[in-house]
Image (tube, rainbow, N blue to C red; front, side):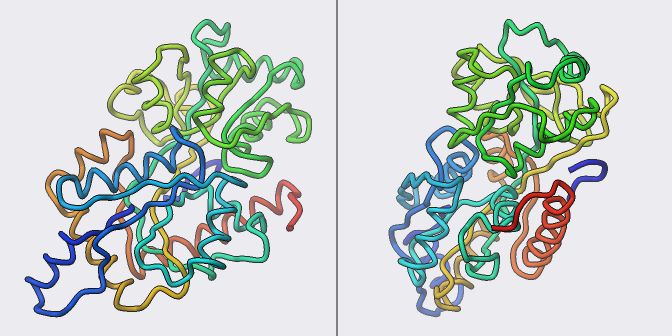
Amino acid sequence: MQGNGKKCLLAGGAWGAALILATGIATAMPRESECLVPAKAEGGFDLTCKLAQGMLAGTSAVRLTYLPGGIGALAYTTIVTKRADDASTLVAFSSGSLLNLAQGKFGPYTEKDVRWLAVVGTDYGVVAVQKESPFRSLQDVLKAVRANPQKVVFGAGGTIGSQDWFKAVLLARAAGAGHKSIRFVAFEGGGDALSALEGGHVAVFTGDAAEVTQYLGRRNSVRVIAVLSEQRLPGVLAHVPTAREQGLDLVWPTARGFYVGPKVSEQAYREWSEALRKAMSDDGFPRRRESLGLFPLSLTGDELQQFVDSSMAEYRRLAAEFELPKR
């Protein structure tokens, strides 16, 4: 988003036992849990569920299940229609999920068809290129797009209308090119898109800092040329200038968290919320979050609902501005 940006499966017997000791009340928390990753491995959803595993390391077995399809649509539909009352399953979501919902990409379902549980961190957009790319800065990319939009192939883990697509078209607009003039290749997840960048199949990757940071931990074949944050990010991307530093006022944050099915009991929902709040207040949580490339943002309860509502309003505005069809 241009200008001012908007500002797992946790479960298990250990948390349930803790709640019993603290309150003396029987708990509905499941002893074994599942975190549903709505994409292939190595993307942002994967990182979100892995954060949950770290939060409960040594206390609860958290199983990750990968269910790619429609950049979250299949997982959303599955939870709403087949596992609506399953209190043992959390699903990872991001701001990109809300953006897709705002455009009707999850079929007949809206943001009101699940129970939003928590945001456990935030990510920021990045612009990356192949290590040997002639693009050394964001201005190099803008210059190339200005000269011929069709020659610069963007790629990311999302379809037209996704948050990664928006990052690309906002870059194109800054170069004076229309959003319909650029070439954008959609992948099922950030991991696939980064592999395509490494192989030279796309020229510019518009994704998220967390997935790039994890990728760089395994390979040294891509180069980040801009971060879409208010200030430079800490850690391995600390040397990368922001888009604002390079003359482009573009900030794109991506909140990450979890939702549960619409028919999960009120007791189970409250206990999930309490477990997540306690986990996020643990002294070791900031370190775990940082190790996965995420940054501080913790929301539950009314604050989370306000965030979802305001995000949906903004994303619907953006969709209308770029004339994206409402499905």
